Image (tube, rainbow, N blue to C red):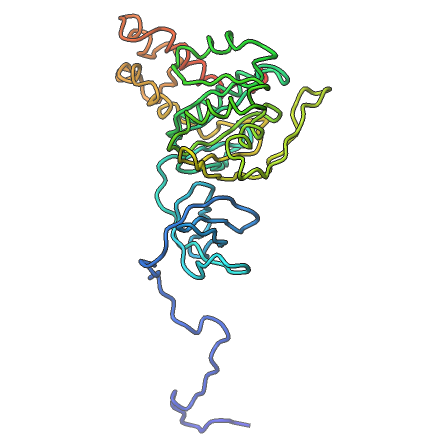
Length: 336
């Protein structure tokens, strides 16, 4: 049966509105100019714990941020319920520009880099002098990641009562990296924490290290009021530590100011994302010598201009050796 007359007009046709896309789309996004500023303290399965003023607020990332993820140390803008009360949830609508980034890949063949910590001033590389044995290649890789990401490195050598630090310190002497040497007894009586704390005054410091080196024990001593991490032991068969920290966590240093960011223990530190041209910035005495280098120079090839630059007495040969040793870690495994 015909529903309309023989001569119908389009106004006579009734259309059913679609179930989806009934609202006009727009590319205009709210600016959230009244959003509150906060700092990400930890991330757990899509929920982010943030510090807003003096309140701890739970939040989630806004859909409009897309795949951009916030990490510990990020400065963020939040809207919604910022009271910090139980069962409330705010929304992160903006991630502010980062001053530094500590990144790593799962291995050297992994093209996907992962941001571990943002906006840290310093990277404390914690390594034991024995039990487990020090792994210089892993230290080198952490140094490269620090130089590449804009963090100043700090060496923290633990368990000096089991082995002397001289050989390891000599290996990094040309880099002029500040260091602190501690023993197990000093960790127990608080002397180690006091000396390390002097290097952290007013700064945001990320702690990284191989499992079993005493990193979490040291963090517990530095921030006793926030003691919430368990400590593990070294496996007598493999010589490796057991992971006790499962996610990065920012903790306040109330006595001297600043923050400690405890990160999970690492057994590898991939550097697939590293660009040699960024690492050279950490060697201001060598950087002028790269002006004559060929394009995309690896700084470890026959035509590298750094050889002539050092030969002419403009820089210490030990510094060039250290630079090339660090850059070579991208082609070598940590245990080599």
